[in-house]
Image 1: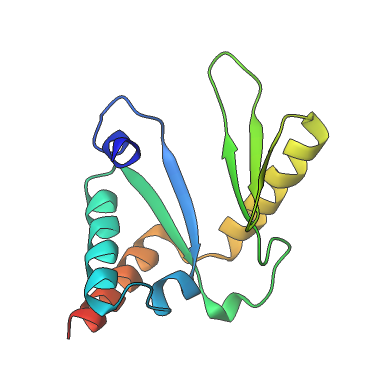
Image 2: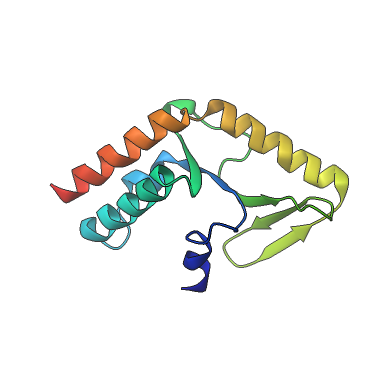
Length: 131
């Protein structure tokens, strides 16, 4: 798809994602598909196209539990946050709201595994799905 192609383009934006361990452990689409998807994520990390961290189950609940959001920064425009729910999404550009999302993301990253440990876990879970 066009979105996936963005990750193969050397001029694309930096993508830094924090995935909850649930995303790795709850098979969606079957074990073969999960192995393929996690292997693809690991390849993107190895190729330095993305930075991925895993928020482990041991991190317990956090401020952004149950929510999905993206932070976007631009060279010539102020940062924005995009908050997404099951049936809708909302682009937020109010500086105070964007700052709240940035703080939540910082706290999530602090509780997540290091990038190296996250990659090892992603690869291990992918192997588990393969076997």
